[in-house]
Length: 413
Image 1 (tube, one colour):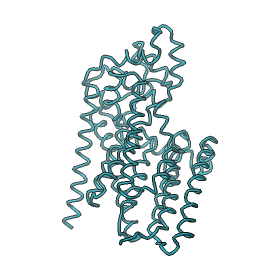
Image 2 (cartoon, rainbow, N blue to C red):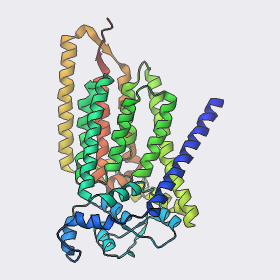
Image 3 (cartoon, rainbow, N blue to C red):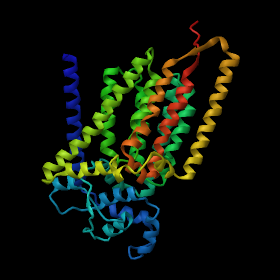
Image 4 (cartoon, rainbow, N blue to C red):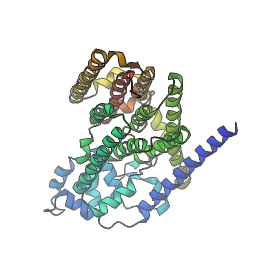
């Protein structure tokens, strides 16, 4: 009983600390002065043209998607409200995010359509720092190189942890997240960097005790809530869960399922707790009910949307044909990879077969995206350009589950 109470106290304390630290960083994003952001954005748009050639900017900005334009607009907005309010209000600048960037560069700071106070916008401080030093192209290139470096580091750690047989499946399924998009747009960079770094951390700290691991997942969930604008948050839970299962040794099916559920609960506590913390702080500081705005949005985005008229089939029909084709290619290539392995094991090393029944536990993780699509139905339907990427979780979990099911016995001599 004492151990359970201590665990609850520790969970609450970690969450409160993360909320306080999160607010302090957000406050700093408005407190610190960034003089070069507009200059670097102008250079990014067109170094050879002055502001009066607006059409050229609009042509360039048409290549920036809406979420990225929201992020840049937030970095440009100069609030006239008290500083402590600015760090919580976080207004959305205009209906057309691209036009908003132009308006804000030109000094029009009045075009607001509402508040994004329900989000943390944790990206704001690092984004402002980067935009103050580099152009958009330089930032994208730099972040893309960081991702490549982390991919290389992960490959090395897979070999060190003797799970190199799963590298091919991991990277081909991660390609379904389209990480190459970071070179064109950094609106997914925060979630991608978090995912890759979490995978790196789990592989590097492979001997992390289960008791400490659950707090790590609590922090993973909280950081996802802090940095992500509700794009594909589930990847920071499911991909790490798959890695954690690969590193897990000598567990029964029952123990493995309990392990998955425990880490999922702690990630959820961190994710939802961080959201609630933001709503509570914003409501107190702004003296308005941010909870109402958040709950109304939740009800609209979830299964109550359109009176339940959006079905699973509608969501999948909304996914692009290009993505469906690439998804088929990834599945087919991995199927060939698994077929070769099974032929080798069954035909050549038949005497050394070892059945790993815990491999079926990966199929539980494979269901997570479908649970997400069911609960966040309207959001998944309205944003197919990123919600479809969650299918990568199902594909990876199923492939690794099948791969993990039949093993060659290790030679202990």
